[in-house]
Length: 292
Image (cartoon, rainbow, N blue to C red; front, side, top):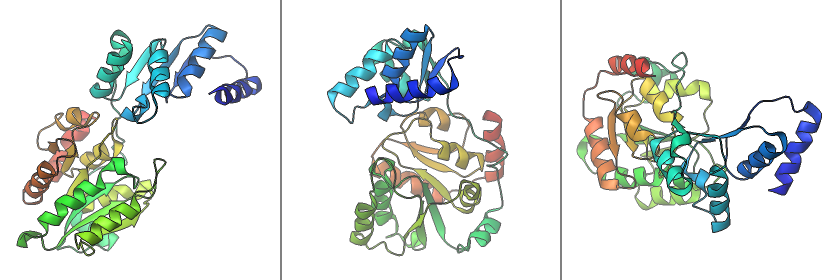
């Protein structure tokens, strides 16, 4: 924490202190440093809460207490979801100082395209039913939950050609690939799960449009960009009720299905429903783009 303060002071020594606001985008060690700058320069500081991990409930009590202490000192809190706003208010009485502002989506980059054409471009089979997951290969993203649901779905004749593509690589929270691949092998899903690896952001629009269902199975999120990107393409989504997901999924009709976090039975039922349901994706893309 003290090292971080010294690093920030070192930057300010080079660029000067002609600023009006300290705007933080993480909690620890940013919050104590923001408070330090507020006291030293007599300037307000704000904080944006981008995910539930910002509260450090996954860490020791000391960090949790530090986050709660300095949230009480922040001039304004921007939360990407109602869930995080509620949590911040519960631990630090931030209600009157909080605004909920979800992430937007660039509809010039993410928009409806013909599914068959996108599959041709990506060299994907036209007759496959495809579920897409996007994110770092960490436990929090919940790809193991989709694999568990997939193991039951592929036993149905109508889903003999069902494939789950995972776009992503290891993340800052660790590498869950060994466990994921062990799950795939245990369920005999080698032909039904593809670890595609990292994909350039500019190529995601093709992937979103090429698949049948986008699945956000995360155990925790703030305001997930990948979900709004997929919806802006008109792709129906199955998403866990974390972060701002409930608000996003309720913003328009026919966007897909939100399921209770870690409930694989609900996840399986939602995937089955959307994989067998006719959806006008072009209309959905237009409607969601108006919302954004």
